[in-house]
Amino acid sequence: MASAATVVCADVSVPASAAAAHPTTAVGPAGQRPRTVITTDMEQDDYDSLIRYLLYSDEFDTQGIVYSASVYHWAGDGKGTPFLSPNPRREYDTPQTSWRWTGDTIIQGLLGQYARVYRNLRAHDPGYPSPQELLSRTKLGNVDFEGEMSHDTAGSDLIKKLLLDNDPRPLYLQAWGGTNTIARALRSIHDQYAGTPQWQRVQDKVSAKAVIVASGFQDLTYTGYIAPNWPKLQVRDVSGGYGAWGYYFEGHSPVPPQWQYYFGADWTKKNILDVGPLGAQYFVWGDGRSTPGDPLDTFGDLNNPPKWLPARKKYDFLSEGDTVAFMNLIDTGLRSEPDPTWGGWGGRLVRQTATPNLWTSAPSDLGPDGTAIGSYGWTRWIPAAQNDFATRLKWSVTPPGQAVDHQPVVRALTGDASVRAGTTVTACGLAYDPDGGPVGLRWSQYQDAGTFPGAVTITGADRRCARAAIPAGARSGQTIHLVLTATDGGDTALTHYARVVLTVR
Image (tube, rainbow, N blue to C red; front, side, top):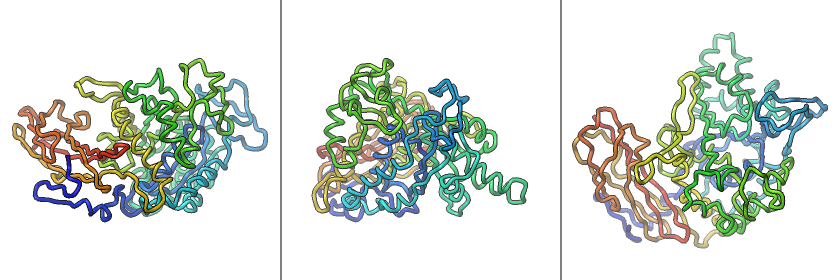
């Protein structure tokens, strides 16, 4: 256990009093944070995901929150034009003039709740964006029909402008609904520059900058337009995480039984619903609430539960099906970006094709016993992610100057290094709790993230410095990922990480 006063490793010491100089979120100025835009149809699971996102908004440089359509939600054109989607996932069989539209004010309403707790959140990290800033970046995108990308909108214009600007950072375009507003922005760029001397340069620039992170393809604009016309642009389909964070949790979910507690009624009510204005807005089963357009019989009416789900209890977790779109952008210390194969709270990805440049969630990770477990790339992080979420809700109701838990600060003292097969290397790290409490340490190998296919023996795994034996059979160029996990002793145990990557030479 780390000392509450001083942590020493490899002749480096950090006093716990240094907490003020080391922000626990360690995100730095806005220019160093992941630059991102959310596009969303604002179904109930989007709403819950947005609550979590706002509590982590100090981690992101949020450039926009944009209403968009999907196969499940679209507004109609206001002229009574009938529409019948060609998508086999649609829920209607006859032409409709609108479908379960959730409206264009629901985001602004939630930002009003964020405004009520903003002062408290800012006391814990001055990087939280102001409600006014987020409100000014909330735009209406392409919402007329599912997959509609026929005209420019305020939302598509915003995305187009960001893609064409000179900020060199990646632009993570989150698709919580359909990709149609993103597709419209890309189409508008194509229409403006195709056939000009600038076209190739512009296409390469946009393809290198944009990263679409989709919690599923909820319209046909990816396959119909983006993939064939922008084949080098990176697209990540993270819908595999829906099994852990979506509507299918109990009875259908891959969440291990010992962790389902974090989605049950008791935990949810105590740690979310009863904790401040944002927590009170969180949709759960049986709460008698729904977003506009969402029927209660599908989303939480205990008197008339859907036949495709087992019995639920009031206050059980409902869904955060879009949370996986931003979890790897959170600075947990796992360094999940920019390489999606490294894995993190949002899962681990594998490349499916180079052209189009499509990535999908890895189907499994190795469990503690060395056997592959389906969806373990997400579910392995659930206790840490849920405890962290609960703590941020506590931040939202804790006035400045009052005690509340914060994440431990973790540093790897041993950087990424090249190693020889058959040798033993020492990896060192340090951690301290800015609140002055104890911190437990554990070194482990993240075998799935590395390219060396075997296990590595680690001695002193619970110490600041551990020794890893590099197998003699390791080949040049193969990588081994070592993760230092630090967990504090607070009421809600908080976890942060450091990663060391060893490359065999």
